[in-house]
Image 1 (cartoon, rainbow, N blue to C red):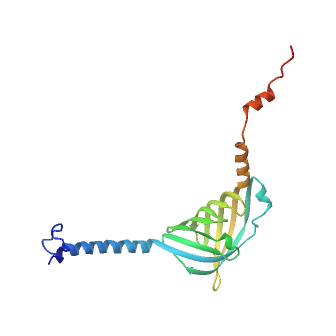
Image 2: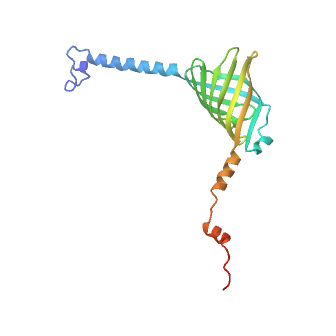
Image 3: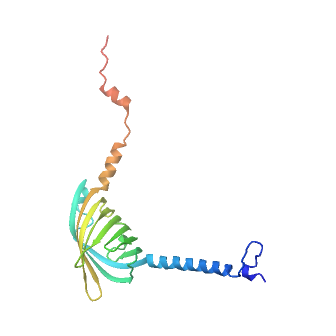
Length: 210
């Protein structure tokens, strides 16, 4: 009898008998708009790459407090299980050459650039890539490389090319960094205990006998 008002005639008033249907339609419309927005905005991506770096993870520059390392990094992408060009993308990058350095993160895309927040053993940080012409992109960002025990700023230029079934990214980079070991050493030395009593006793003149 009271289906028009959800079987609740005391708390619900519907003079023309259509209000409850209108409410359900409004909720349905809002939910559809929300799910469509989520689908347009958020995506996931999974890739598998093999990276060859002209500079090994362990080299003499790691012993210096400050250094600037330059080199060429070639990343061959053997397969892409799924891809996304949506504004916000959660991604996983599996490393075929060293599984321990696989990474994950978030990408925020715009028309001409992408901001990448990465979490991996050799790349913890944030970077911004500007898309250029002829498949050449430029990147700069803050990076922590735990395989080298360094933290700093990296700038790079990447040329993208393709074979029949692979994508090849050739990156010329410069990494200006500070040694994490030196930062820790300076911090540890600066926090050593200091005794004013011992210092004053050492420098005070000895008393002369009367």
